[in-house]
Length: 359
Image (cartoon, rainbow, N blue to C red; front, side, top):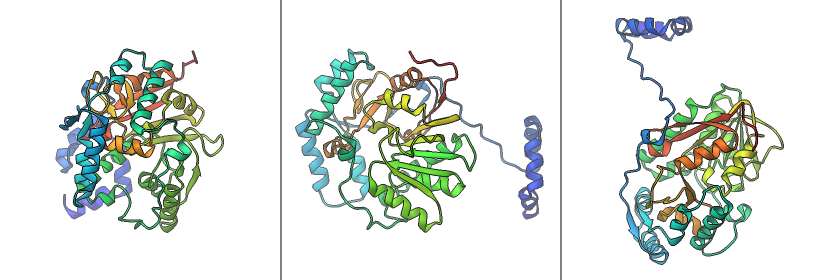
């Protein structure tokens, strides 16, 4: 496109006129004006078969003891690129333990299933009990990190991995629903990279995390950029009193909750009328998997990276597709599933079902 033509199309009036044209007129005018063809936006998937299947090869490890030895071997070798360690740990999977077969025989919404899943989690952790206010903490400072290059995902120094995160950010931006200055709450934002992006766009941003280190990092970044992000140290479903939000986001965070239906029920009181919740970057697995990281409807993830985090105390769950979608329906949500060519970017977007009544 010539410089003159480009300036014409960048003019606000030209943009406004173009938006008012019928779609069939735009189709005919594009080749005449030298404009590129538009790619249709992705539609929600009707079922998980439309989503890309995880194809990453993995090595199966027979016992938890052997798995812990393999993790130690990966961590103790000569330092290499962070992404190499990440890949090695995500491709080691524990052979489905005896609990997996018993869990597959139970209703995944039953108390018996939940109890068995938490028993397996405790065995993987090496101790009983779980308290987010203690077990989900990182127990070290991050305030010595460079704010611009020393925080995840940039500290991996891997353009492909960072591109996956950008894919996630783009997917969530397309489904955020309301324009600025709508109110957004992100649970478990970590270093806050996506929330900072929303703040730069003019959204009224709120962060809830159990780890104060992360909240301090978010506030430092926001202050340096002249942005405002409200932070509250609390658990999922809580924070900021009874305030409601136009969008509630979980990015690589929802799987830290041991009671998914309970949390989804609570979130109905946190979303403003017409609002929505977004889940992205979650370990969502195709139905029927009997090996790999999640060989049951939901439960502890069995890859080495997750087991390493579980040993620290973190709750690291995964879900098969139908279970999570059904959990939304049972708690009064109308979910839509958006697959993506990047596995990390699969997404569920849900609004409150208008005709739902509690059972």
